[in-house]
Structures are given as C-alpha cells and as structure tokens.
Image (cartoon, rainbow, N blue to C red):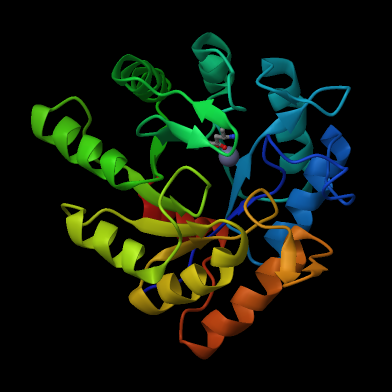
Length: 271
Ligand code: KMH
Ligand code: ZN
C-alpha cells in the first residue's frame, strides 16, 4: 500500500436525474447493481446509493434499498454509502428509514439550500436527527458541504459537541444554489475545515473533472459519477459511470495516487 491511495466514491444514479435527460440512467435494481459493479471494476471503492421505485422515481423505501444492496453485494465488494438526502422534498422519516439496514456509510447534508429550482431543507433539527440515526446504527457519516454556511455549521456543531469525529467530509460544489466548483472555493473550504478528517471533492457538471484533479493532487479523495455529471466532455454524454471513473484513474496513476481497493478504502476511512 502506498502512502495515500485514492478513494473513488461513485454516485451511480442520484435522485433528480431522469431518462429524458440521460437515457443510459440505471433505474431498476438490476441496472443500478450492474452500474455499481462496473464502477467498482473501474476503481470505485464506495458506491453512493440512491434507488428508484417501479416507476423509476426516487424512493427511500427500505425494501428497495435492501434489494439493490443485495444485488450489488452478490456482484462485488464495495462500501455502500446510503443517501439520507433522498430527493428534494423527501420527508425526514423516509430519509432515515434505510439506515436500519446498517450500510457502512451514509450521507449527512449540513444545511439547507436552494437546489436547482427546488429547496433542499436541512434544519438544525433535521441534521441532528439524521446524525443520531446514523450513529445509532453504527454507520460512518459523510458530512456533505454544499456551501460555506454548511462548513460553519459543521465547525459550530463540533465545538458544541453536537457531532463528533470520526467522519468523512465531502465538498459537493457546483449545485445551482450552492457554492460553485471553482478551485478557490475548494481551497477556502479546506482552509476552514478543522482537524484532519478524510475529505473528498464532488464537482457537479463541468466542475467534476477540474475539482477531481485538484483533489487528487492535494491528497484528498474524489466523487465521480453520473448523479453529479452526465458529460464526458462538453457536448459529449458519458456512456457510463465507469467511463468517467476510467479517466480519473488514468490521471491519478500519473500523479502517484493509485486507486484504493475497498479494503484499503475501509482502512483509510476507519471503517
Ligand atoms: N438529491 C439531493 C437533493 C445526498 O445524497 O445525501 C440530495 C442529495 C444528497 O443527493
Ligand atoms: Zn446523492
């Protein structure tokens, strides 16, 4: 194991995308599991998981999460990271329901924001309720920071003892309504981040590649996948999650950041 292998987190489907926008979107349990397998084969150690119901709509139903998780586990070893964000407007009780399945990781968004045309609500009460459900189930949280206010909330909650390490931090930049994915914003957030927790960068849309390259170079980890970005390059849709991952693996190898396999990712994340 080299000093700092690169963890690739792959958000394979997301909650907001539709087939109208991205025809290759995996929707059924079988399709999501197969897309996950291919992402892991390409180098992903963590699958950031949203699931869809029989109509292809986002759902936080426990039975669907269970079915998809089983299908992924039949195919490959990887860390499953459940979304507790769900889709814009998903009620809290539904957002935390799949945590009873005890995935190794789950997300925790650190504040409210406009999210495209919708409003993504995460009051202090909601954040702490999700945090508690994550901890009660022995899950490692990934704190998602979409803008500067969310970083300040993380700092404040840490100071007050409302949240505690260990956790992983993901800077999700480029959502319309949050901070853009300009590199200066990543540097600003990294500068504000207290302590020495692991971190990754998730750039949305055109920010995915430049943010990932900088994260690799800065010693962080990356989130690469279709939930965040459907294009390989301007005007050219990516054929798959794996296609996006293949490119960052090539770049990372050039930068002496060999990709962490799931076992190494567990060690790095302290799972
Ligand atoms: N779908 C977004 C509104 C997460 O997965 O934790 C929220 C989201 C964050 O995707
Ligand atoms: Zn998500």
